[in-house]
Structure formats: C-alpha cells, structure tokens
Length: 232
Figure 1 (tube, rainbow, N blue to C red):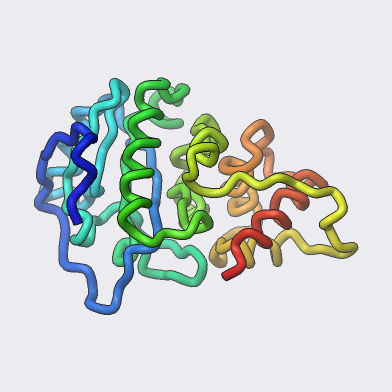
Figure 2 (figure 1 turned 90 degrees about the vertical axis):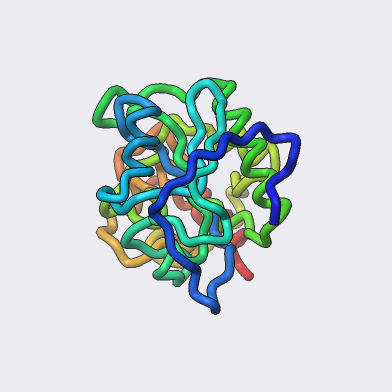
C-alpha cells in the first residue's frame, strides 16, 4: 500500500530489514524516541548494517519524515517484549522513531511541528492498516523492563484527540471492590515483567505527571477504563 501522497516523505533506505512471516498481520504501531544526541546520528545508526536496528520511519524535530523501511517489510525496532500476547512485535508492527535525545542525553519536550508530523503519519498508517486503538503503544509499554521511550513528555492525549491510540475518560463508579491493578495491566496488554517497572511504564503513558511507580486510586481508575476499552 502506498503512503498518502500529501505527506512529504523523504526516502532514506536502511538495509536492516527482513520479510514478515507469511502468517503475520500489521496490527501494532510502536512509537519510540531515538535517544541519541542528534537526528543525523540516529539515522546513521538505523541505516548502519553493523547496528542490526532500524525502523519504518523517523521524524525529525523540524517535522521532516524519513522512510527507512517499507511497511510491508519487517523492521528491527521493537526487540524483546510483548503486547496483548504478541511476543514477536517486530513481525506484526510498524515502528516510528521520533527524534529526541531521551533521558540519557537531555530529555526535552517534543516540538509542536514534530508532533504534527507524528499525527499526520500515524493517521496515514491507521487509514491503511487495521490497528486497534489499544495497539498503538509506547516502546516502554511492550518492554517496560528495558525501555522508557517515548517517555512521560510525549503528548499521548493530543494524539488521542486525533484518533490515535487510547486516552480514557475515567468513571469513579466503574471500579469494583478488590480490583487488582496487576490484573488490569494484564488485561490492557502488558506482558510479564517486574511489577514496578510495568507500573511506571503505564504511568509514563497514561498518568505522566506522577511516574513514581506508586499505585493510587487514579491509576486504578485509568487502568480499569483502559482494560474495558481494550476488550476485543
């Protein structure tokens, strides 16, 4: 399928890809930050055969969109992890790297022009592939034991306003007595990981103002709404 022609996409092919298994389906969208000191450094690494990493797209801080791997091919962006019982995320996903130095090199807010390109590219992808809102995720959602990206400054709520991913309305009456947070995270799609790390990953995505790993009533309410919204 061809990308929407209104997007100004710069082709910058990476050699780091393979064929998708014949039984795979593109039904997950994973958003990352690059976590490197510059966008050029990130592109160079994603296109270096020795690195064995890649993504389908990269979006620069000035809004430029680079296509590194064709969507029909399997890029190497996700690594070890799982989401909603899918344990081979690379084979079933599209990966977008968003230029930001990340927590190691001076994490900072994502520029508006960059987020506008993220929104437009995601809308384009979602218009061509059947990807449920509950399967538009952060890299840290599928690999909370290893990853933090795109982090607590990423504007997930803004993306949800444009039809990209979930941002639930919480209902204080919806929570049942004795509701278990870990059980709710299981139902949302988080795999088996350290309980604190996956709680923090959850908070980075859906309650970014407090990523302490402490579970409170607000976390329970958000998790309940997400679990309900994630049901098939």
